[in-house]
Image 1: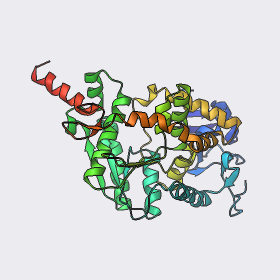
Image 2 (image 1 turned 60 degrees about the vertical axis):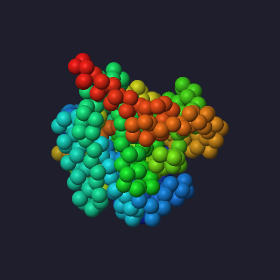
Image 3 (image 1 turned 45 degrees about the vertical axis):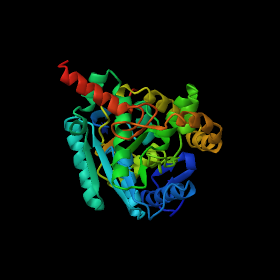
Image 4 (image 1 turned 90 degrees about the horizontal axis):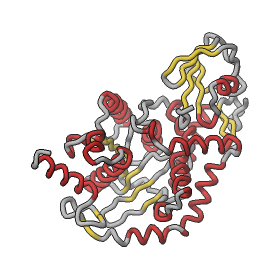
Length: 64
Length: 306
């Protein structure tokens, strides 16, 4: 399980290990979001651990 | 992922530039990109006094930071539209950045200036808040810039904003609006020059710059933006960009290359702007400008007790 702060909301996703799998699950694309892992920009080839602080900021995609 | 510039560990992929890059190199790359735009489009020079319109969001706040780092002489102007707690929090962030950059900041309070906040003004005029917000901001930005002797007003409109507006204008074939859309609106009698240095910067890049540079900015959206029709067009552009990286940038660049075609439609509109408002002197096509018309109506209604 990974705890994620999506804009200001907290959500929990199961078995998400990478940036792309998280975005896919949230129906987001890279063009409208920035993902931070422990305050740094998360790259698409980085792995995510359960205790990582993940924050997603979106722009122009709020309706989905 | 390797940074294409320093060959260290990269974390950012800018598909529209076919570039993988690390946070440190991104900051250098982005500053260079903004400066290149300023020089290429001849937006302004280092000896000019510039006034930046600040909403408090990532774009205007990041731009203030970048222009200061690039040694441009740029002060800030914020217009408080009266959104309660949201306005208070936003103002705090703007004041914080003003202190960090050691730059002059003007704050205009709409309620104090005209007797109404945006919500009240919208209710009173029965006009949508977004059109009133634009009208009021354009008026006060121009007024302060003229009064305080600034040579240009800078806004933080990014590529996503501008490409969305362009698409909206094309879909409706608003020829005069297309002739007016430009990153450099030269000064005219009664109007200060208006410039948009972020015209070729994706919203993703402006957000990355604000985050990596740790710039204080307001993450809250305007309470009226949820109803904005432009959001659907922005989303459509994100999808197009996902399948064809760079399409947004090309759309804007090719438009600017061919913009001369639309300029005559704008000039026809400008011919009517020969009068001066009898109350405030603002250029207008009527006896009284749009804002003074609203204020005049308000005074009449108050005096007749409506």
